[in-house]
Length: 422
Image (cartoon, rainbow, N blue to C red; front, top):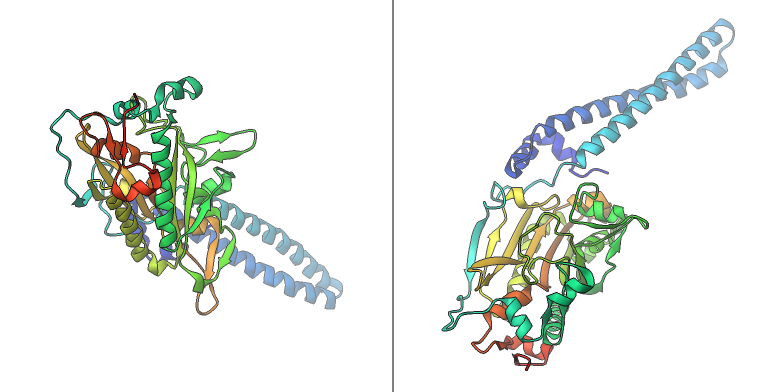
């Protein structure tokens, strides 16, 4: 299972070295890969050469007699031993090469900013931040006033970072996700409600390190994993298939609950529903030709911005730095909505171009115009998620604790204003 294209590795190793450095990763892995690949190819070449000789030898033995036959049989025996050893060596080196390849993240797009989490580049800020002539309430205080969010009973039933969305809270989420799905359908996406439990090969194929990722919930008895995004089942949907090139791009809109252990976030965002273990999301997923992936990525971003405009949120778009991309992404743009009570922007959408990285792991290909199978590119992007409720409540609140429903969302929620419960 080649994860990075070996031809690219051989022809342009400096590109992978640069990508590794941009991510803050060790570029010495490139030399390790080149060495393993060279040794594997050499062993394979010797194996094939000796096996060809072995086949010819078989014919010679049948024609020979006496001492000549004895000598040929001795040589044939020796060849058989060498062939077996070389085959084992080639298989061993192939396994070693694959194991190292599995640790190497996708090649970063050359234009992506270098560095870590704080080295993003702000591409644009959209919409005016609200100004209040009263002290704004945070989303949890508003959620409790509206009878929309119940953290206390969520913790009682399930533990910390779980919650109930209730009354107008449930209506707000359903309305938001339905509006997102409707927009996706109108843009040509096929709506999908996906499984939330997947096999390990689906999780690994999408780019998650199941042995080391502490974010993932696992059901050991069943060897199944709870997904943190419907990107996982959607990426694996066409695993081991060859798609019709004329049908690309194939676009799916996946609605699912998502589960994250939030293992590394102890003490962070403990108040409210910003960082929780379970939430719902509508995710865009696209299969396209690799040469079309860059433009497709910009289209996904444009659809995310269209949704944010509908709910009238001030936001900014950031170009995420290479060291914060995750394993599969070659480039990622985040949209971050303004959260008034925090005085900062927080991520509400993310869109990634994974080029052919996931498709190589999952063996998803298409036939080009010449009928030859090629790997597709895969891309994903959030269209709406539970966290949007935080930004909607805070930006559209009024002094009495009521919240104005953005106009485009009203037909889906069935209310113009969310009023505090008496």
